[in-house]
Image 1 (cartoon, rainbow, N blue to C red):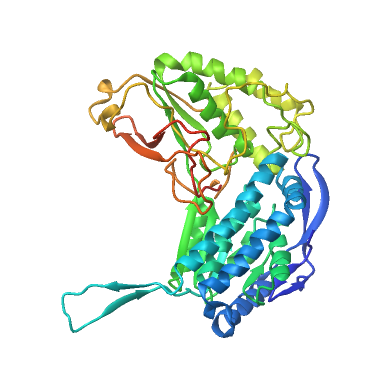
Image 2: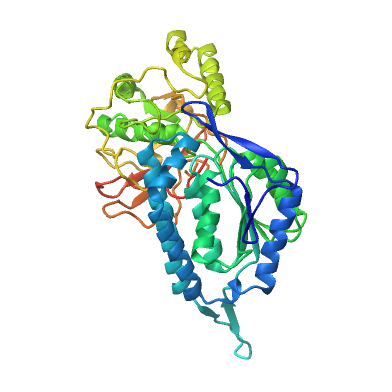
Length: 487
């Protein structure tokens, strides 16, 4: 495990010696310390990336040449997968199988962009003009120095989603992982060394976002900032980027409404809702934290959800059979408790249900585990490409007019309930971000057997409901992916 910063191909300690503790969410044990970069380190990293782009070989290599490095990085991730997965689980808290699947996807992401680097190599698009005296061509060129700021819910996977495409395009970059989950992201520096990536092409700075993150986004030598996280932070990044007209990409948090009609298959509804809210402890931007249920189905659906939730084994992510690990840190745990208290105050949750927290530790890990999950109604809890977003297929086809824009009295009888999330994710998810559940393209190749999805928009200005329902176009072996998510 690394405890220094990766700058210009070297491992360096912060000038002021600042360090941050690394806490295992399951045991609340401090098991490591990482370097906390400051403004001086941010300046050094940007300088290194700028030099590597302006005068180094990386942006001048062909796409085929860059692809060799990306494939080598994918191989290194796979070769180190067991060690990296355990590191991810101790850092983030998620069950070990989920960490293994995340890292498999991370390796696949590097392979995916290696293919694109070759496929788009030297491609020139000629634009037809009305005036034959002129010729217009569109040429793809690397943008420059990119900064990638990633969240804590999918530490290495989200880093890969940003690092791989930037390197494939010929950019140089600085990666800023979340301060609470930096371990596996720092290992990308080790991997970069192992494959011989030119110095300055990839720089990695752990530390507090308010310090090193702010210094990076305000640096005039940075051409591009890609951020996954919360809306308020995204707003500040956009404002800071406006000063220099930086290119900004934001993937921010939002609710992910899940609509269940009365004629839906209740077991499929239970499957997708459970998968959406308990995968990765519910710390996903596309988590099914809000469910809109047509009134006739509501009592039975709630009964089935309570029944299945009681079968989940909660515990340390490293323990065999654990399906739900602890929340990522004490702050997230306390945030969830605030939501529970608010639900009790509003009469949406009984005090008896809320008081189950008394038997949990600071990160929400119970001091006793619930019975092991034995249900066959959750096929989604097997190897997957991360997060999923799907609706429950209706037995009769519904059109956009399912939520007419006529007065509220004409609306179908919907009972709307807030399903309290297993975690309150301060954002990316996506998530594994997206606002709402609209799926977007994600770098990892689609798994064999996964279905494509077709969106069915449903909106009602009278009811204040606006969402997009994703319905599988066929019955999949695995659910259709909600791609590009974070927290």
